[in-house]
Length: 257
Image (tube, rainbow, N blue to C red; front, side, top):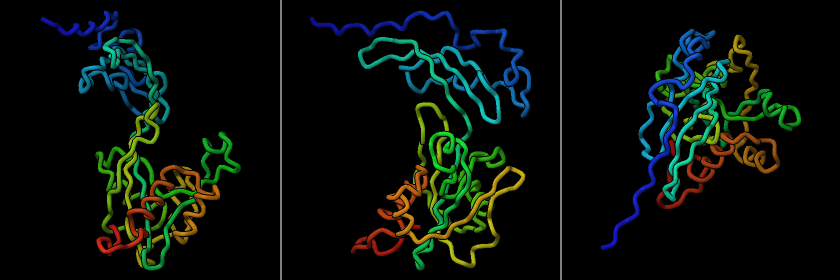
């Protein structure tokens, strides 16, 4: 009789996943003491994860509590060969976001933004002024409702009060280190839908220029490097392949959205 080899046991680990491995961290802001935004228990995120039997979370260390949160998590991971290894990963938690491509199919235009982005500037962009689709982070008041968030951002940044929106996809943009999932939307607009100048919120340091661009020119901006923002490229390509500016055939005679 042939027997299958036993699955290697998970190695013993001194940490107990049910409690922090470093009790002295209890005095750290964001753990048991409120941080500058009044938050506590930030070191508990991820400790109860059990959806994947090949991953056992051992410890979560809170390393920074600025506006967003940086954590270092220690976990055991079982590989495809059955062996367990202990690994550490840092994750940057800035919440989830939403972005939208506003298009006028009749006039062949899209609404984009241009604003200064310091991370791009410090990493080689000539002037840090990026052309992007409108969008932003979900607020706590949104209660996870990305549609509500994108309606607000469209009016604040682009000056457009949108009607029906089309969900396109939800994507992890940098899954190796950033927890954020971005919800992508598209919606039609007309001249009458532009209820304000846009530009963002001055109290949040936003100074956003609104651009109305021919969709063919917008795609040329990808080719020549004037558009280098990932979410914007994805939505412009979607619009050209499957959305409002896609070629129409016998089975595709109406625009998406």
